[in-house]
Length: 236
Image: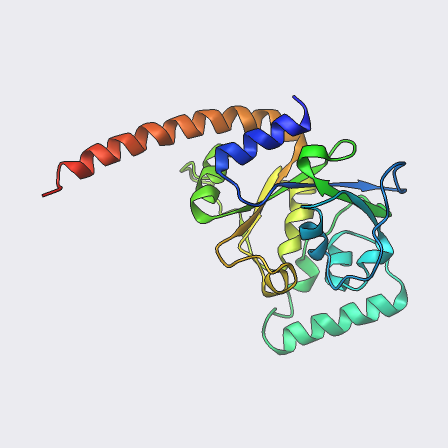
């Protein structure tokens, strides 16, 4: 199945109004992929630009966002490390983070020198990660597809908080999927509506994800018909 078809299945199944985007981590700018020009305030800013076009962003292009650069595991020059330290200090001083949290923020374990971003439907090359903006009802389906709603003794929440970009290393290094409720920084820089939740999927899981998606949609359709029938019994 090609990326155009995969994109169409996801968009249609979830009823997405914002197109899914994809990411891949690289050691050099791929041939035929233009490097993005200009300066940008955050790592998450690139996610929204990627809805419209594919591009390459070097590690340096991420240095205006020290938190994002840290999460991506980039080697940062001294001045960026110092800015990162200042940001973390600010976060702790205003009680946004507790002092023991920064050391536990996930970071990518495999170091690369840049990132390719772009729409999933025509992403140049093989994606590593797919990113979607979901509303709560869509996020529920996403959770069901991935088995996160299955009741068990070891059941754990997969909804992450701040920083939102921590879903990237979680998805690539620990779990094949993740979700963030969206931190203040992400919502400020991306200007995404408060109705949306960020969800990510490791592209290696795309085949099983799409297969389970069909089963989940069918199950929810049947249950909705049952619930409507039940509700109609009580309509005066």
